[in-house]
Length: 147
Image (cartoon, rainbow, N blue to C red; front, side, top):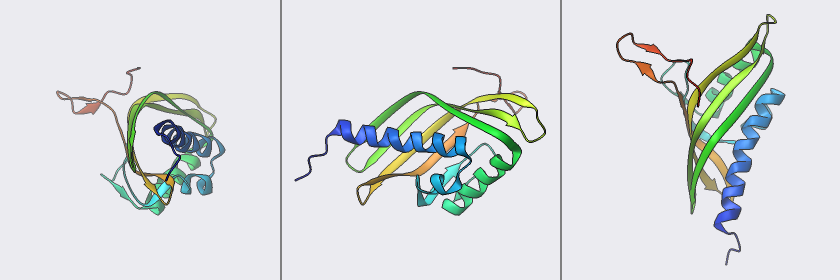
């Protein structure tokens, strides 16, 4: 019989998402690899429409790390639902820092969704999605919004 409580699972999921933040701040692809399922599907703000598999997800992060001399990520207003072997959450994320050319950027707020599954007792991100609202008249993303 498991002694794991729903609160323990929520704390573990939050810990996994904190692992993403820590991995980004450290520009540590090995740390990020530990957070994602091997078959993760990611809908990011960059093309293509989807990144499939952990190697594609890590290649996306590698491009981010190459663009930034120093990178920061924050996640706020995270709302989680955790049950059994699946969890999902949504909130707002912002990537910011100093670009490789020395430009300091405050970044932009995006909508972030995370779906996790418990595999062998470990919570892994199986899907994530990042998006910005769209102005239907112009077809352009609205990147100046704040939570």
